Length: 122
Image 1 (spheres, rainbow, N blue to C red):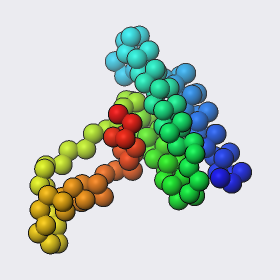
Image 2 (image 1 turned 30 degrees about the vertical axis):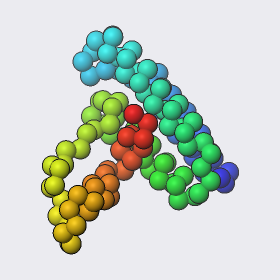
Image 3 (image 1 turned 135 degrees about the horizontal axis):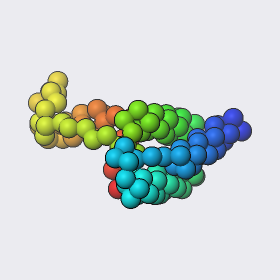
C-alpha cells in the first residue's frame, strides 16, 4: 500500500468514527441512535480488520469506493444499514440460456458497489 493510499484509508476510517459520534437516528429515539451508532462502529471495525492485509491496489481502490458510497448513502437516506436490492430469482436475462448458473453470475455482477462486502461479513 502506498503512503497516499494509506493516508486515504486512515482518513476514511477517522471520518466514519466522526460520523458515528455525530449520528442521529431518523426516528429521533435515543435507543435507535445508540443502536445505529454501535452498528456503524462495529461494521467499520469488522470491514477494516477484514481488509487490512490487502495488497492489490485495485482491490484497495474498490474497498475505498465502497466505503465512500456507503457513507454517502447513509448520510443521504439517514440510515446506517446498506440499502437492500430486490431482484426476482430469474429476473436477469442471459445471452445464452444456461439457467441458474448464469442467473447467479449475473446477480453477482449486478450487485451495487456499496453491497460488495456486506454478504461476506453478515
